[in-house]
Length: 308
Image (cartoon, rainbow, N blue to C red; front, side, top):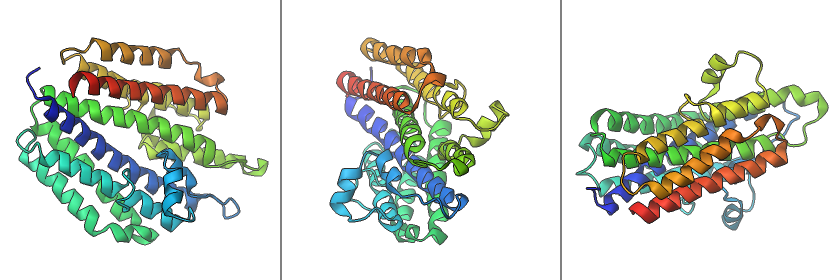
């Protein structure tokens, strides 16, 4: 391996932080729209958004109530939250700044510009009127950077670590959104409101920009089992869990000293492919998602051990 471990580490985490920023922006945007689609008598809280990032305890250390204003501020602009959009963009900027000689100059400039724009306009996101435009600018900004890197960066070991970071972060967020959203978005739904379960699963799909691709693949009404299969097992959809694992596997195969990491990855793929998702109730799904997330953590730890 010709590149220094410090450079690999920064590229890997730059990609993870950028992906995390985009995912958080998508999540808040879709959840805001879900509230408009549901009937007035069905009240939703904002705690599920905090739960997706496993930040409930820390949130209540900083805020008294999980109202819309507090949760949005915590998830977007609060630098005390390491997973807020501003925090992750700041970390992405710092990592990319130290490897400016490795990534294309235009990509570094775009990361810097996105960070400055997000920072200077962060207050506007508190009001629903300006929230969509702000979050959309974050999403498009990260996608622009990804496109620049794909189109102008040499696809060598550096790029492999970038793709590994992006896809592990993507796989992790996919499982979090499925787990928390399916359990908590519409808890204890009255029988007369069960048709709105479709909106619940539609919001899960839209959080991952998967709705249109899902409809292309499955032309029936939206059903829980079909959504789970699509988001966890669809081989050709870029944000499915299985596709992300395949991307990581492909990149690892280009790197030396990959035996241990690939063993962990193969074991996780086997667990995923053997799962009988159609038989899972909510408790079994939650336990299974925990196993997938533990697998992601093991892969990350093994990459740290063998490469960084």
